[in-house]
Image (tube, rainbow over all chains, first blue to last red; front, side):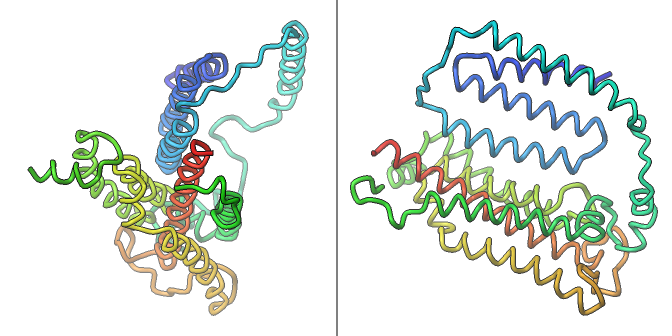
Amino acid sequence: MELQILLLFMIFAAIVAVQIEDLLSSVIAVGALGLGLSLAFLILKAPDLAITQLVVEILCLIILIRATINKDLPVIRDGRWFFNTASTLLFIILFLIFAYFALQELPRFGQPIMRVAQNYINQGLEKTGATNIVAAIILDFRGYDTLGEATVLFTAVMGVLAVMRRVGRKKSSSMV
Amino acid sequence: MNNRTLEQKNPKGMTLIVKTITRLTVGLILLYGIYIVLHGHISPGGGFAGGVIIALCFIHLMLAFGREVALKKISQGVVSVLESFGAIMFLSIALLGFWGGYFFFNFFLHKGKPFELFSAGIIPLCNIAICLKVGAGLFAIFTVLVLFKGLGEKG
């Protein structure tokens, strides 16, 4: 029940974030959405994910506020609101129809059918010695996945540092 | 009196209230991040969340006191070295597993008792490596974005 209320709150926050005029208010609405997601993870009994979501949300919020404050972006309004609304409704209806048929095949919520995951849960403590089963899975059984994820983050940081580097800029636009 | 001299020394950054609160809380935030990382295999948390908290500690310092104070504590070069060190440490832990036979082998054969800090073999080491990588990487991204914002205002 709490989960449904939270989901409604998150949908409301997302609509506010898209529709509101002021950029700073939009960023704050995105922050409310992230906090709702963190609480939803907590209700679904995933504290690791809740902590990660909370701190990443705070970091993103700080970066977004620093990026949007004192900045006036023009609001683009075109006159094709009828076509836009109609196409959006059409795609939503198509998605709901196909989702109705596709989601019937999925197992019920909270009743996984994966045999391997059950094996990990049963033998995690004795095979790795870690009492946090999430750490045991992501760093031991599925360490290769975590290595790939770390590589993705490393590549992203390298890309940002390379695009925004100091060396090679023109002298006229040099900073500080 | 002491606060006033500090205020005069660092005219950049936010107001005195923010600076005082930052001075009180920033150490606790850093300590909490280190706790989350070191207890990643016992309680919820882990390398990623702890690394982001440690990066947020330095970002907090940078927002309150200005860029120079934060970069004096930990400079851009040190951040780059730490991030690369974290990545190489994680990869070498994975490769050392070949000593026991396969990739990511838990090469500490004595895994310790559950619920102890020094247990679970390679998992705490992996957590520390991921923490270094994530924390240094996100702090580097934030520093670069702040620098870029200054550039946009000037040019």
